[in-house]
Length: 123
Image (cartoon, rainbow, N blue to C red):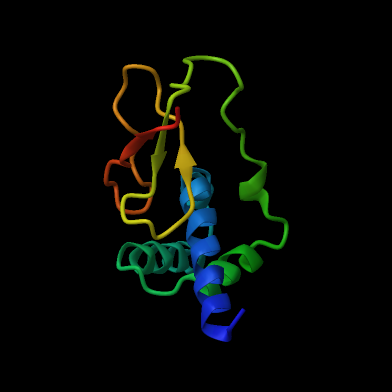
């Protein structure tokens, strides 16, 4: 794998990580020092404009060595179901996040740009 290909994959993985965890990271940002919140804002801005975020994201993760934002409660494994025959993907293909939409519901939104994620049938 060439250096540029490895860098592109690193950025893709960083964006996927951010998109999957952004609600928890945002929730954990309240009460954090201004520097943390400023860094998170910079990451979100860079992600929306599709400029590199991997280095900034590493700084954010290192900012809180305890990683307490990772200890926030996650969705419980019960509740509304998910459509088995559809999968939603990143609106512009910039990351690898996928999500199954709720039955008869709207497709989920990208957590970075706010755009609806297009769905495709899996069957």
